[in-house]
Length: 113
Image (cartoon, rainbow, N blue to C red; front, side, top):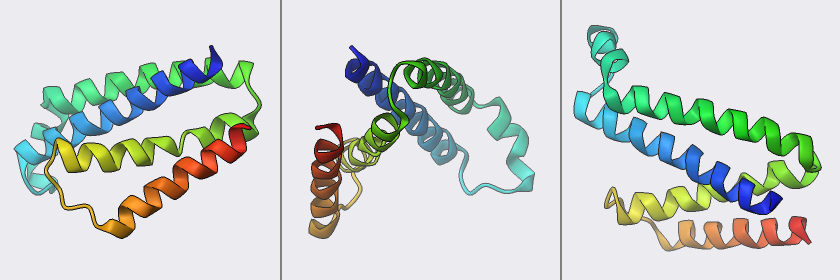
């Protein structure tokens, strides 16, 4: 059950980041002139709300799991980010980045054992 909660937490974190990416992409290059647009963006607000939920879940996870396992497991968010960048945002991901993602997954596997 704890690992399922960790996966949900990772999905929430990455979902919040995705909304922020969409929000700033719609606004354009950030600067002082468009701070109000950023604050009022439903994507930015939605990402913030998701982050609050993820933080609450993270506190619950920390109360149930050793920090030395739970925290490194969060690095799977980086791996999910690579996939989302590639498949959703159509970003170029180099072979060395894919190798890095595999190394992260293997490292999490070793820590979780």
